[in-house]
Image: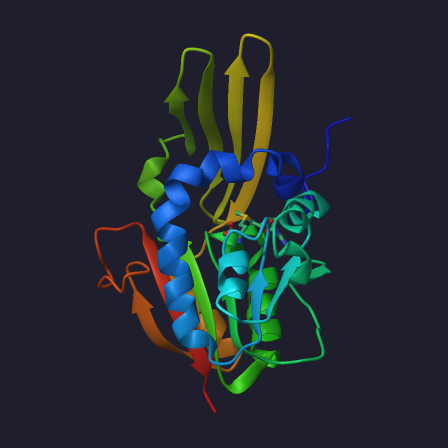
Length: 249
Ligand SMILES: C[S@@+](CC[C@H](N)C(=O)[O-])C[C@H]1O[C@@H](n2cnc3c(N)ncnc32)[C@H](O)[C@@H]1O
């Protein structure tokens, strides 16, 4: 019987290696992200959707902010709790497709493509609406995500690429793409002498105009969009965008 992919699957499978796997890639990115988020946060509190192991939440909390999070994966949040300051992050174990926390925030944010973990347009629209309900009147919703590039896939809407080749292991990424649903189902495949390990990740990507439309449906408008955390112009040569929406009223 094949396993079902749920909101928790990505995190539960990858929690044990997440920080180590992305450590190199994240060093500068996390510092720049925290600096950017700090400028929007005011006195706090702030809310992170998909807080994970606390890569961003913990250094942001160290600046003196009260940080809340939502996450579906017990394994990811267990890693957060193990770290210094991890117990102070208030985490709701739930999906961020819809939520009700009974309080509002001057800043809600979702980074590292995590918004795309919501696998349908309906869930993504619902998330924008839940965020809008949780913003203070002058509050902001920030998203960092990749800019979709479907030319990555071949004519059969597939892609297999090599992440790394070491003496003791090879890491491959293999994915199939549904351009109508804007979905990709992928596996990181880690092959070594002793084992083959699978790290599944499924996403529904969205282009920036669709995100802006979701924001409008939720009563938000775009205030700023950058090509990266250092306020690079958008569109830029980078693959990412940092977008900030605020309430229309
Ligand atoms: C790529 S990780 C990002 C973690 C952290 N924000 C960071 O930047 O390092 C995505 C996180 O979102 C969580 N997640 C995925 N889908 C979710 C959902 N529908 N509801 C709540 N959390 C979800 C995962 O468990 C994981 O912790």
